[in-house]
Image (tube, rainbow, N blue to C red; front, side, top):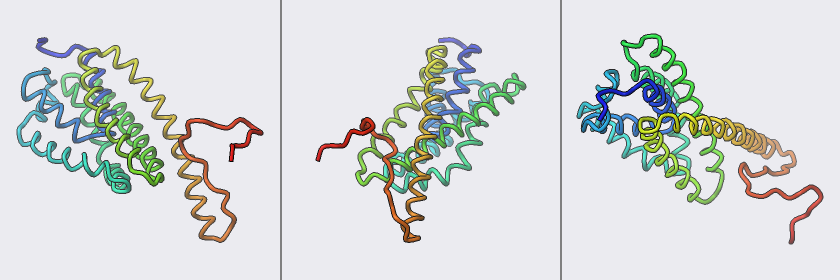
Length: 224
């Protein structure tokens, strides 16, 4: 095992930690602490505090709470709202800690970029889940939550094991996140406007679903 991470691994890890903190902050802290505690990955000095047993226990407890809170429609969106002020600065701080005092300039850049990645991931998660919560069935909500549960450890592992592959896939994830934000936000704006029309007594034309698999061509009417 290498005694330390090289620069591509550090850059990929900072990006992964920043982004993943916007999705599952407590899971990031727990996984980073566990791999450092058992010596599976040589953590940078700025992250070694996460391997303390008290930090591992506290983050593990919060992971347990978040796992269930994030799968209950409505409660997951409230959880996201509360964590808006937590995930983004934490993502910036953790990304900066990858470099620490030994790489001062890189730490500042990592904080700025890591915070931006955390914000992008958080907004994409929050708006998408809010749009999904308008569906009456709970299965899509649980499915989206399980995908997030899987993406975080997979992203952290890939950043250390295959940093260049991670960075390529990471760009695609960022593009997808921006698309999800635009798509979900347009739907939520239309939904809010619909609610306002209903309460004002104006005609309600309805709202087009945020995500639909197939679109009828112009002039084509659906079968009755």
